[in-house]
Length: 125
Image (cartoon, rainbow, N blue to C red; front, top):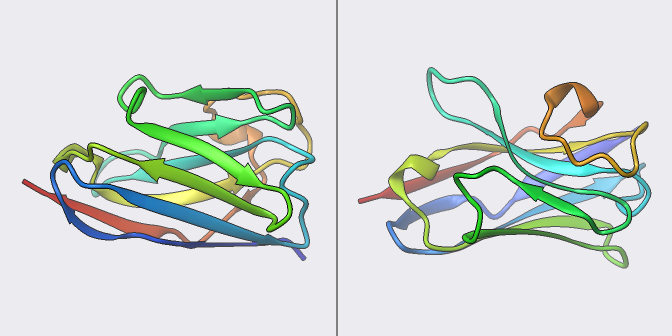
């Protein structure tokens, strides 16, 4: 079965950086669209960044220029490099994968069938 395991979260100060990883098993990261979502306490889950099988990417306006989504096909792993972190980036971050769409990069939860358990990111001011 498909498993997505996130890692790399932690606590950092404002302006710091973190790199999140999402190791996939039972799933090939290069075949379909994948994404990162996040959910802060009391808020809805929101899309952060997505990547299509052709390498096309899409970012939420709030993270453009600060976050970079990428994948390593040899390691079958998705990444999210987060720089210039702000307190408002504090949330649980989730990896998501589609088994239907290869070229869509909309940050729409409905596109993604598989989800990881999440990794917590906390940014202090």
